[in-house]
Image 1 (cartoon, chains in turn blue, orange):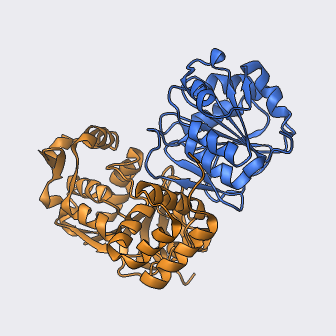
Image 2 (cartoon, helix red, strand yellow; image 1 turned 135 degrees about the vertical axis):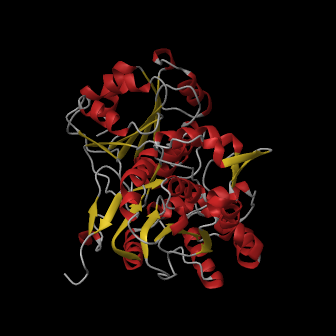
Image 3 (cartoon, each protein chain N blue to C red; image 1 turned 180 degrees about the horizontal axis):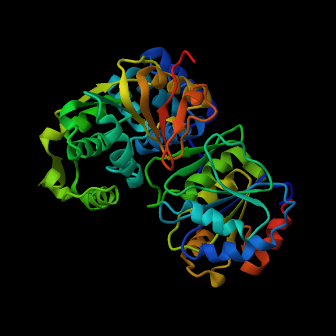
Length: 187
Length: 278
């Protein structure tokens, strides 16, 4: 996709290593924001932001409610909240029931973004041991967005990307080494 | 099967207008993304087949409207949620208030009451419960009925006990409840100092003066204007030198009341500092 307006990366077990490998090669002049939804224990937010910010020159910060979503910025979804998108391109946080035993849920964020960004959205689903995110990918496709998954053969836990390939009409299946190049070309 | 949401943006606005006209519940200041998600969730939970029927049922069936309010507002809560927050209450905020002859606490958006019982336990352990009153309010009468019962799923107690210990609790947490089939029934003396009442932050006014107001994970569902309005309501309801506690992702920053409030380190707790006349 060209002229992408938002990239959302979702992942669970085994995804952090992928991000650590991919982030350093992402161009600093990308013209869209990157939003990262990672399943993890609650209360580990600043650790994750700090760790990821050592891997890139892009600004890395936790997504805050009502915040304007800016390009060239990597937003981390806070633990224990769902992240939603408003029509005016700001974030909302939501502390409602877990979805797929998860909060944040990748499905919730993908689905909300699909409605707001429509065909200007790209979602990438990484390694993980449950199917959270797959319904979201299906909805992103229905709104005209593009969906990519980590090649299950390269995933520490292949269940999540396998489910995505099985159930969603995935556009790209990416080896970890090719992810940064894919992302850089979304400009 | 289509994955598309059943209720679109325009229909969300139609429902907001309907419930304001017919029931006086004002959701116009609610963040739309969350509200829309809750409406679609209810629509599919209740296996609704058309928007027209859904709309008619909400408008014409007051029993269903009660369910509507319960389901579109978020009622997720837990005991001693964010243990560090309760640790600050225990070690810092409540000891400061201990010097007062009487402590009035407002839990705004108390949902099913887990926070009220957590608060009562801390007050009891600090030997302050006898001179405290906890006003626990919510927009939603159904959750208040549950709150007044003081019974929570036994399956949650392991987590709550861990939260309690992490918050600085020293007693045996299970000494506060008795197991009753699948429920944990909390001691009646904990709720002696609780008053449950409906209160709508959007439309109802200040009803007392408090030394401590807690409103955690409610403002995230409101737009900026409504957030400011509600913060003003809290300001009007808080004694000078009183404390205001918000959720971990909420703030008084950017609001007109922020200049009168000084934040305590680490937690989302602010103290009202200066006289209004200054």
